[in-house]
Length: 460
Ligand code: GLC
Image (tube, rainbow, N blue to C red; front, side):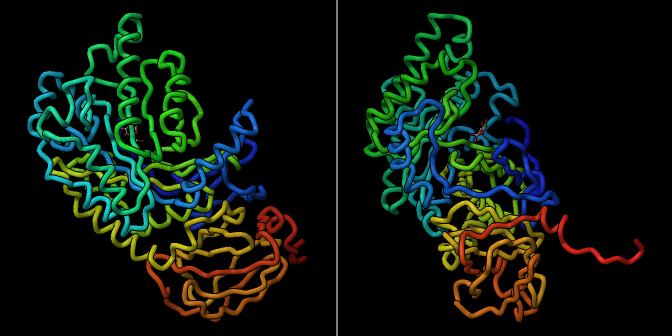
């Protein structure tokens, strides 16, 4: 949580199988364990004890989000001025009185969020989630409950209002990140042991969330974070969610206030939930959420696009972070990557949006997304004239390049599908997509390939 999240893609792509076991991931990074699990359509499933009406309501609220697949996370606060990562206050042991001085220096350009929203739109992202209050405790909006907020400090205005307006202007859905943990408020830690402090701090927390849910029109996502030092009971999280749904009947909430909420939030790793449970991987482009000047460990375009595909393959979303500077400008490295992702998405969007979980996932050259009986083969490691996929139990009926529609020849044997006559060099960078139609939902069984592929008698 606090240390830099250095993780190779191989480590980061994991599947939580139906039985709860972690299976190796597929695609560009290759798994070696056979997979035989069958897919179920994505979408929220009943939490234990949920009524059919609650399940139906969840499905209604989650519909746009499942179709969206790709969102922008924005970490912005006083740490953006300091430029040492959003955990700087704690990781450098900065006294509260000293850290507070950043509030006067936070002087963002007016409407910085408009450029973020344009960038998100152009990248193909369908929603934005911004930090309204991170662990540092500074509120980015005009709250009546503390002076430690944007309207009464350096910015002199409501940055949440600007963000909402900017996202809406681009037709993007709006999400609020809110950290329950608070390093600044006098009751933020002692609430763990002091009952009076807890009552004050829980009332303060509910009050801030109530303002966010009341003053900015329709909000689409509430993204809680770190519930230290209390549990769901201590935070009165049931009551919190009830208040949120009363004020925002269409909103969806995540699982970080101690309750399951509508979706899970694997962080810095791609871990598909069991079929039926919604999930969203949030990830940084380097290793920091908040602006960290010195962090140059940027992911490549190929990794970022591969991650987006892998999330869609598992029926999940990809919430990709930017950490704007104190003035609101976005680091050039992030702009370049999002712009390039957008160019790819301009062509390949239909193979990502509205896709369903794909049971087919084993390859060392490709990742897969699916719509009904159509499989999109996303080839990142282009092999030359033939792309082969093992273990498909379903019959292929047609193949073509996406989006050009140029026909692709294919031959299917019992254990192998070969897409042939392809160019020697990858037609698209960093990932080329081939669309393959099947006579039913494509299913892959790698165990069969290992066990049943005929052996020859030599040397026996
Ligand atoms: C962790 C970190 C936090 C970041 C968040 C994003 O909880 O503490 O800095 O905002 O993850 O998922």
